[in-house]
Length: 398
Image (cartoon, rainbow, N blue to C red; front, top):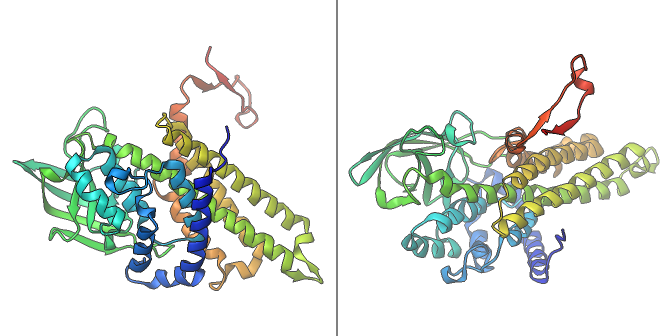
């Protein structure tokens, strides 16, 4: 399968890299760590002017009519630059959910605002259970006539402090299937029943705890069908997962460039450290992980672009890329040695942000479990008396 970029995608990649090298240098990333908002509204509107916020939306909603592969190209460059912005929350997790399941009135009203940079959305999904599955949704939304009353707590909510709307995933009914009974509510962030608390995170990326206390939401603010919100959210979660993979792939490629440059210029014991076989091994291992990450990421993005079933491909990508990026960061620290662990070094920035991407929307372990669930008909056959550690053949059930 050929994953070569077409002419338009190559142009997008070139423009994005040039723009972000100018607008999002290392100094900007460090400034956003201590900024109260964690992102730059000025840069956000510049991205809107470039058409980036409208990339995956159809032209009738003022978008650019791009596909998921186009989006992956852009996210790879964002990851390379460590761009701090609410793009994933707003455009992918919020915007694509509205595009997929919102009413025509909701699409016509909200998507053009997203495209212009006038509307920021935050997805409130995870809870104290720390589950990425639908059975972890326990925030309740009780119907009272033509409105709902929401109570509960959401944790690790990205971009909530700067959001205009909160896309809250709440449980409206219990059922035999955990996917049933979940509804999506688009709530004004300034609702008096909502309180925010910034959580202390490794990447200092302003994740929040959100508490909902008797928050009244009209039924007209439901996105999709009542009780069927998980199905409405499913595609956006898949796309978001692949975009995190693309982001880590871009970051991994930049790490490789930094490591290679350091190995060629750092002199120790009167010779460049790049002649050391151990350093060469670390460079090769990073390269192989990055190339593997790109392959599985673009395969998943392609299948999503073609609207083909991609559950397996998405989980394979997230499981592989999460582990690969963690390995790449660790190897980069090994090559840079003590210099790579100082606050002045850029390597820790990639490591910290990489950890957020590895965990968000399900870590490697979560997605390996999903892969196992989808391996229908495959079993591990272990003969009696055979040591488990020596037996790793996987055979198909006859």
